[in-house]
Length: 66
Length: 424
Image 1: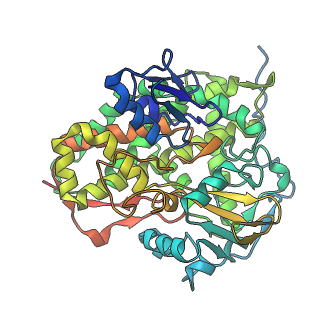
Image 2 (image 1 turned 90 degrees about the vertical axis):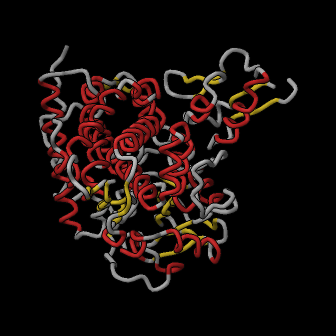
Image 3 (image 1 turned 180 degrees about the vertical axis):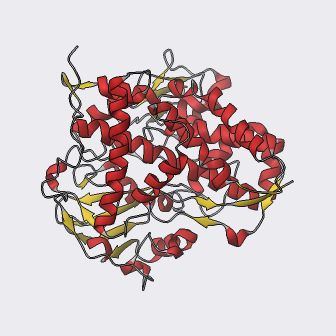
């Protein structure tokens, strides 16, 4: 699984880096950013799904099997 | 460095004939005849419990109308609230408090309190000035002082059986945090409270009275600005005084407008969120006991309190006549943008009318949606979390002392203003 952020939708609510701090961080203005290449270790898949499901702007994409 | 001479005149001089230009309408108050055609968020029935009204409207309208405030609309579905929040082309933020006064169109795209009152493209520039100061990392630096202050507030309640969780606890926390952030004197809670109430709850006051109250706010800010011009320090006020947009320092009205925004929006909202959360826990022993036992659940529970008791409703002005989702909107109609109503839409949330403190999927809109997402949301979340952590640690057992004595603020920011709880 890989995670991506649609920068056109992200408004910096920060739910992703609150809920999955191993996968997401924030930039200098508080917008979300993917840490590393976005590859999700199996043990963090649940966190990735939770982050995506709680983004108010629906800005997080999960690419299954990637 | 040149002398900063932007603040030699007071803000009233800018007005032409002593009154701001713009459009006023007849003020209509009193009982609502039918919420679908005559809604008013300023009436006591709404303040006491708006949710059954919103649920009813969502089923039968779903966009309510009022002729009060010179005409306006109230969408109640999540889908419609989101669409308006995203549509800055057709809905302006030129005024975001639904009142009996519409500021002149020329005030766009800046508005009186940038960036909340701004439209694109100016909005983005004004917003980017503020974002770095309000990231999660930046606000985490305020956490130790906030926690210590919460403890001091609880210390001061010692020995009382019944305490007012809204007046003696919740309200003081954001007052102190915002005062620190802007570099304002610390012990001015009563004054800030007056500013907040004037702005948000004084909507139906006679125009001259409302204007006089706004003057008091801006006179106060001007005095604080001048003090910072004289002696700069490491705070947001000095930051705004030094900030530039497009190579120019900010207009005096921009500096003061942004300070007013941070003062008003930073206090009433968080105070309401803390108070509403404590109200829920005081009245729902099972949730209180579970949170005391499972501290790790607090971040999830907090999001549910934000969803179910979202304090903030925004407003927009319709830019041009149009047919929108089945209603005929006219230019200059208000739209009351109810995030609380959106957050209880069963089409968006399972068991929308229930408060589930372990709700895993919670895409609520308490901090808005789109480009105007609350700039202080990370600060608010920090304050709310710390306030609840400290309260539950120090006062794990509390109940509503007198449910009928609880009062709620009317208007666009809703939260408990009197909240007597019995301790122990």
